[in-house]
Amino acid sequence: MARRGLTHDLVVEAATRIADARGLDAVTVAAVAADLGVRPPSLYNHVGSVDALRQAIGAAALLELAAAMSIAAAGLAHDDALLAIARTQRAYALRHPGAYAATGRIVGVKDEHFLAGGAAVVDVLLAVLRGYGLTGEEAIHGARAVRSAVHGFVSLELAGGYAMALDPEASFDWTVRALAAGLRAAGS
Amino acid sequence: MARRGLTHDLVVEAATRIADARGLDAVTVAAVAADLGVRPPSLYNHVGSVDALRQAIGAAALLELAAAMSIAAAGLAHDDALLAIARTQRAYALRHPGAYAATGRIVGVKDEHFLAGGAAVVDVLLAVLRGYGLTGEEAIHGARAVRSAVHGFVSLELAGGYAMALDPEASFDWTVRALAAGLRAAGS
DNA sequence: CCCCCCAAACTACGAGCCGTAGCTTATGGA
DNA sequence: TCCATAAGCTACGGCTCGTAGTTTGGGGGG
Image (cartoon, rainbow over all chains, first blue to last red; front, side, top):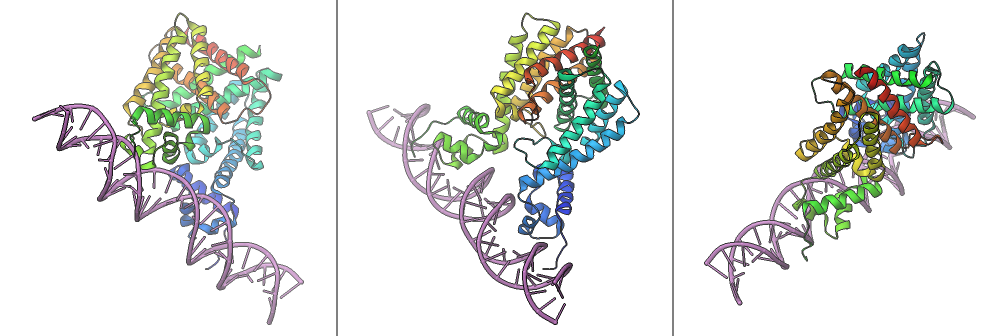
């Protein structure tokens, strides 16, 4: 019964490792507990439920992603900035597939860290879109368009939807540039 | 032990109803069996596993979706055709959220109906893109771009990601038109 | 027309999952 | 030094999927 000194953050970190290595569905109480060298019920001292644990994974991922996107966009404008944040999001998703998947489970999320992380990501995107001259409702349309394209591309890629031999990275850049052309047209 | 006359298709239909009404995760052997007035193990006479059942839901959805998109695009060209198939896909997803979600679980799918359905959807899309003058690799890039944008938008919408008051339908049309502008630019 | 065999449904069960109840004990603060 | 808090534990219940082996209904062959 030696104390392991677990904390909420340590549990979330272990869960994130498992999610990235074996998929978000592999994040079970038993698996995380085993990884931490502890019996399953002990986790409930630090986490409310499996759902809460997965939300915590997503929250951490969103905050990390927002920070990375913000850095990537620094000093860039227009298409350069857009391509930079889009590539950053895709790179993050490919490097942390499990954590990125946790980002998408939004239905009925109450975790405020999660919501704050999501808002931070959108804020970076809106800042970039401001350079396209999009304002008001147009800016929201534009943000939804970019989020949709990037998230959709990455989701399909992670799901194995791009079976054809053609390089996904080239398709990704092509997609972002095509959308950027539409944004320029809408902004002028 | 009265025979219920179950068939593979009847089981898939019941599962689809449950998926659309209560979410894909609610499609359990127990739930489907109860809906059909049968004990859980009986389903294994018609279905290999829960995973196979969910794939069958997705396969049926893809075939139905491809047919609907094909009809929607008939007699239209360029942006009209693109907007028509995109709207059809979104409408289908909103009307059958559970079945549409089953469409996205692609990893390791062997069900040939599923793969055929996916190919049918892509074929309709490629036919529409031909009108934009996109050929070879450009056509594949374009197909991936449109799939990404539409699938991403719908996924985020179903997941509750569009909390803001602005009408999602308007954002959807805006997104498709913005991408269409990019496709025109690439095709010329 | 009858009978028989196949398969559809059943009961019973095992393993794995989440989460709760209640106990023991380590440890930091008074 | 002691004690209250909380971290870890064992034990359990209810849910899930899936298998094994049994019963029985009903359509096809004689």
